[in-house]
Image 1: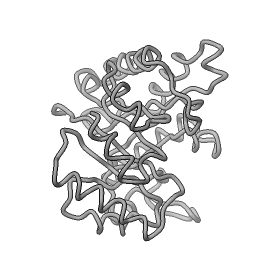
Image 2: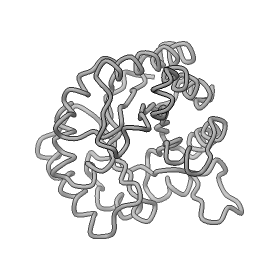
Image 3: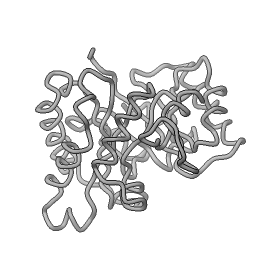
Image 4: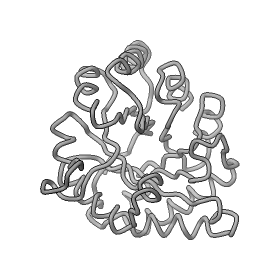
Length: 249
């Protein structure tokens, strides 16, 4: 694996309609005028993946999905496979987000199987990990997060392009943000696991921070040790909010 550029990815979650594509076009236009030194991706809901890919064609912005099934096809009503996302124009996919782990009972084993499916379908996985407030207050944060990294990343990722996103569950959408020291502590622990599992490749894998990233705090967070980008939620919905975060790197 060659040296990896930082990555700023926007997770639109269950937000966005056809008219929202104008925000993506505005973002692409601004980045084309003044390029940045990082990769940028937008992960819209599945209904917009194809349209987003068409809207951003020729720009520097990649398109990603928000989840995928481990299987490539089958009788799984309502689910989407990695080959389907790739066919629609996606290059990446978010997997193991806390909202999937908590709301849909996704275990590390399920996430690992989805990673395998994403790789087989030609997508770059962004694998999410993070502790709840109760786990943080109990002093279990590092153990929980490193355990998720250990068990959610299959050996087949060796030599492949992927990212890990640390999202403290208690910070997502709450307006709360860990201290820089807490962020660095967890990112360093994640790095240790990545290096142990994947050697030199693990030393180059970007570790993104996610959890109430805003224009006001982006520069400080992105300057922290072992932070190689960000997974941005609500602030990625509008170009005027997302652009300053990207430029803060």
